[in-house]
Length: 243
Length: 157
Image 1 (cartoon, rainbow over the protein chains, first blue to last red):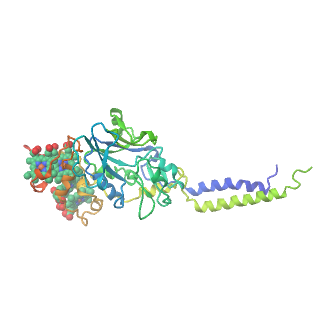
Image 2 (cartoon, protein in one colour):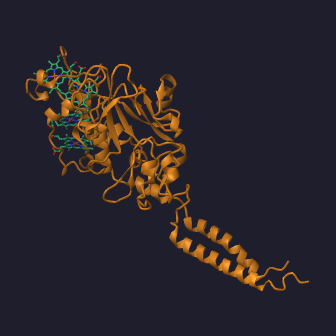
Image 3 (spheres, chains in turn red, purple):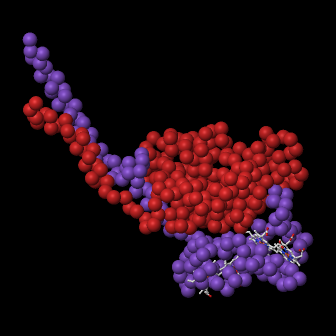
């Protein structure tokens, strides 16, 4: 067969694709941090949470979260006797300044800190039409704010209500698991400032992380397991009334 | 019979398609960011951009390098696991340049009760007080040392 100019034209798409990889270049690597060696999550021990709001304040300061919006917040549950399907939940100002005395000290009262669950099968990343939100190779669900259109699909898709639209940038925003801190070997702002150790950052790929021992010896639960999101925020002592 | 006798228009059509594809590839080359697809269906450079945010909380290890005296007092006390910046606030600026950034004085009337005011939702084992009854309006640190708060017969713990 003779190669004609027309045949050469057929090769163009392939050449185009190859050229793109040439242009992509090498990734900017942070020293000593290998993306493939980490898989981040969090452990929340509800039996230790005192509802002081330190995590909420720390998160807002560390991440410049706009006033009135929350990347993490604390809820207070009140469950009377057997009525676990109708808990009363309050969270004044996200629990940022602590909580007033319980209205009804009888029954069951407890605090539940919430944040993005950094799901391994996250509904929010699946609905993004432009690839602005994604699961990083080290297991953190992030938003690329330069790429986000602000279409709000992800806000609706999150079963845990963890996303909001930033009123100044008009792009989706959420907990980054303090990605800028964990990449430097620090813990998240909320974990750093939790006085009782109720919140602990966990690296599920690190065999010496205490999370593994904890998971083996405690009955932990994730929020809304029936959503099959494979959430990576594990709760110890989670009551059935929490949703 | 020559099958391609009247097929000229087909080749012209194919040519139009090819030109279209080429144009698409060229435009795509300019519009799609270079790092898109590096790790998956997103802009790979976003990872490094998000990781480059500045810190506000320096972390207790940093504080302890300079304030070893406070650490010494704190490490055997009941506040051993309460980190510096939980009470003192975000102080990465101060840690970078202690001479020009002086931390604010804390108001124990606000600070201590946030954690210690009695509340039915707190775990039973956590030390709680009803501040109005407990302190008689005195500042908490008139009796308690913030870095080693317990009051015992053998002195502060």
